[in-house]
Length: 484
Image (cartoon, rainbow, N blue to C red):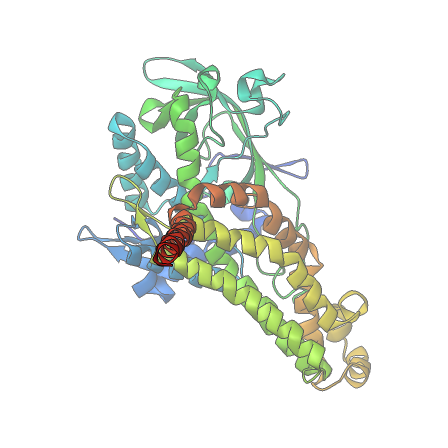
């Protein structure tokens, strides 16, 4: 087992990976300035082993390894994982960092597979623990025409598929999208994105490969491009994710790294097993974002001198209720955790999806409330270069002072802008709607996970009692009539 430090993590990214950014081929991701913030952000997943060893380092007797890869065997393990994810996210200002998603995929493989496939997944899991591997996950296919299954797509590469096979390997072609951390990870785990039929068997595939595997090319999104001034962008000037279109052009995968090979009956269960953990990760890494929303709302209300107004108190209470409801569901998911197969616990799917749905459903209204409290300076206020100039700053200090000094007030206003209206805020808005599953996907899982036994029994009990009362009443009336 091993624990790497941030420097070793960075050095591991220097290889022959094929990465393109804004039309330019990037020969060394660690030497490319535009990626520096993203790599520094992901390095926090290694830094936390030093700053929070009791929480972030595990040891089962074979030596220390990252606690992100500790297999959850109890409800307490799930609760500890939630705290670890939240703590790391807080270090990253409410943004997911690196190891969370890869460990979600490892647990899904270990829980959903059996036989030889499980043995290969277990061997890969040990490799990841022993080498402290940084994992990305490629699950979402580009999908093409959403009304058609994989085998009916006009372009068969719109879902990743097996195009060739020999005794030692499979060869795959196609593409995945929204692949977080791909350009700054060591390896990629590929998972199916949906349930599949026998006709889709060539598309039922799961495996793991190094990022520098021949034929694999990453096209990194330019979102959040450019330098940001820390006065104006206190979050996005320091924290960033790299997301990619991940293209497989006849990529050869050794069979010891293949976990699903033309087994369509397992595609859906494996995809859902990943979701069970990934949405738990989502709601826990979102908790610091919710704290930022509430804290910024309280701060700006005080700075603007409106904290005592009745309508402001109501808005703050609504924000607190929203944030603490999500937190409550996240904690409930750990309390209700149960064995999900192969001795591995999973968070309660009902509570997890309720937490994620409540977060996503309420995020945009929460952002609107925060903007309402902040005022128009979020859009029209002075920038960081203005504040840096001593002569201009004197003017700003005079005219933007309120119930708090101008500097405190303007920093809060710019934090709110970064959270809600800037590129980072827009990114969070899209994540709230689509990341880790859409609102419709969460509603589907809530309906699947809800056990209606108790609710049905409550109705049966009331109706049975009413029927028995009516029967007893009729019997008494008959007896009384006979007596007369």
